[in-house]
Length: 172
Ligand code: HEM
Ligand code: HEM
Image (cartoon, rainbow, N blue to C red; front, side, top):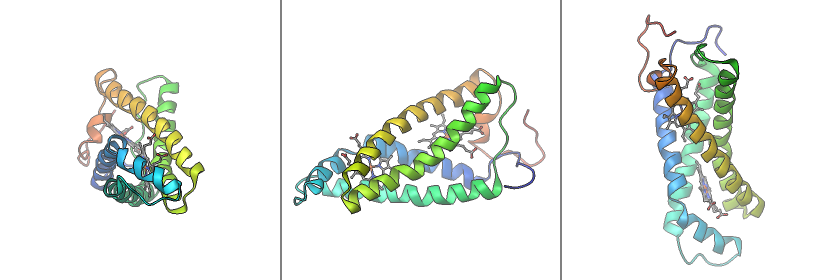
């Protein structure tokens, strides 16, 4: 971790956040094909349906894993701007804890999926499904949090994840 936290997110952090978010939404919405293909693969049968979609799901998922690894590295080396202190301490804590959980999930989702698919491990497929439910709940909470920061606390939390904070400008 750097000695002093940065004032805003870097362009790399912002791009990675939105690209990963987009790919995650895609994975959450488009997964019927991989589920069909997995049904056959788990039974040790030849895949009848969904192989093309399954390959897309796997390709996108592995891309998320690679981007998430870069993202965690940048987060650990560069840091992130501190949370605004304009709200009750439990809310600040909830925001920070959910960020850690989201980082965990963008790594754990593709890893569990890959272990299931390549290793034909049923338990990993079950874990993939449980983690999916956790991910959906956390993303919902995260979006509510981001909108709450913007519209209720009226700070620049959302804006600083949309564009770089110019050097020298201050956020409260
Ligand atoms: C960002 C990463 C990923 C997300 C968000 C994601 C999301 C999902 C979702 C929502 C499902 C449907 C589960 C259900 O019907 O309840 C699914 C199924 C599946 N995914 Fe992923 N996935 C990701 C990465 C991967 C990767 C990298 C692989 C394999 C290399 C993979 C393999 C599978 C398999 C085998 C299934 C079928 C499991 C089953 O039906 O029990 N996923 N995934
Ligand atoms: C799957 C989707 C998403 C994932 C996995 C995700 C993950 C994350 C993570 C891990 C952070 C913490 C960054 C850090 O401080 O190091 C973060 C920050 C942030 N996210 Fe998301 N996010 C997602 C979607 C969204 C969406 C849809 C919005 C907008 C409504 C959003 C708005 C924000 C904002 C404003 C921050 C900055 C918070 C702050 O500076 O305190 N995110 N996101």
